[in-house]
Image 1 (cartoon, rainbow, N blue to C red):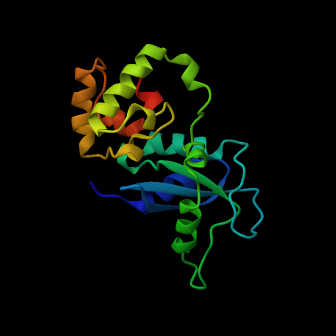
Image 2 (cartoon, rainbow, N blue to C red):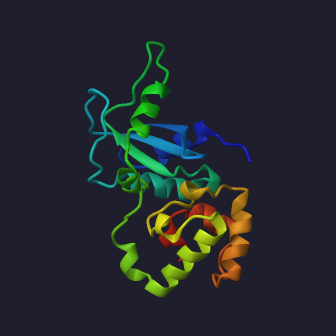
Length: 194
């Protein structure tokens, strides 16, 4: 599987209304690499690098554009809205600054940057089904159930495009017959898998 960062940026810039600029980077998060998309909205005034409130859900729109146009493994895990993308004197993205910003974020802050609504989904899901899913994921990843929540990304608990096949098999055995590797990779948030 070939990862095309330029294609991800192209989809976000051209298919997402309201995005002025985008830069996607592969970031180390825990023991895994994840894709992180940094977005700048059309109305943003260039200023010092800072995270901007995503009141108009630009992250969710960018995520939807990626899901519509890209294979699952190329959909970023996080969508972070910025005041501007830092550039070098040669007009290249300053990846170091973006990495420092990303690594300064706390887990609770990262959950809000997945480009999806983290509040509405939990009420729609049967508690027993969610408990069973979290137990199956905990068994598969050898993590305690307390480490996995409805808003956890499977990529944050060690699942990648290769282990998604094995996870699919484990979930099917655990009573989730519609779990396919493609579905798992396209919907990496635990509540989306329920």
